[in-house]
Image 1 (cartoon, rainbow, N blue to C red):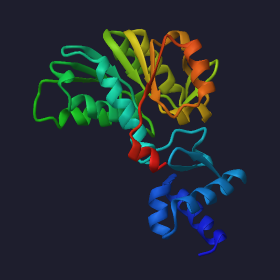
Image 2 (cartoon, rainbow, N blue to C red; image 1 turned 60 degrees about the vertical axis):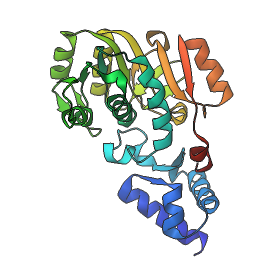
Image 3 (cartoon, helix red, strand yellow; image 1 turned 90 degrees about the vertical axis):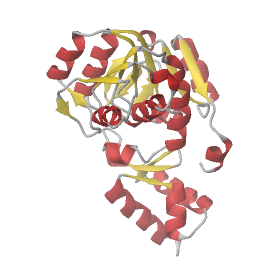
Length: 267
């Protein structure tokens, strides 16, 4: 198959899926991962897609919130490493809040499988996170759902959600982000979701941002947190040295979760 045919197929998959992974395309098109990387690089240079860790996303998703089902297929290994690190920030019996998005969802998965979740209460505006708790055989974890308007990322936002949140109090809030902008802060494409994230930060003693290194090269519209408002940022060790140094200067604590070797080889 010649390069133009492969690239046409890659763009076709992007139109239907919103995101593609290098490993999956390599198997599907029966070529090496290096060949797919070259095709994606050429298409990115033409502005037809955006490269992300392990694959590519459609340019049409850059300033709008991708579907939860699309986002959940991207950067899975990075989210796992970040989630494992974030679990250490929860103690049995804590009252915590978990925001929307797939990184927060993966964190919830790891937390509920750990000893740290014993007796905790979770406030969430994420429908997938609430469903995770409901599916538990043990009822040792209590979940409070905010209510509100459903976004493309299966998050509940808006005035109803904000009203529920402002009447409560939590030890720690764990939030994902669509993009990281130095020196501005953390951003979302949905202004209502940004406002709901701000509401959760307002009731928390501590704010932890969970985000992989690709978010430093993403673009978004609505600021929900400045660096000085955040206690801890947990990302992966794929963050470049310059962004690492600049972020350390702006935030109270930056944690770089170690990516396992198998995942790095599959980038």
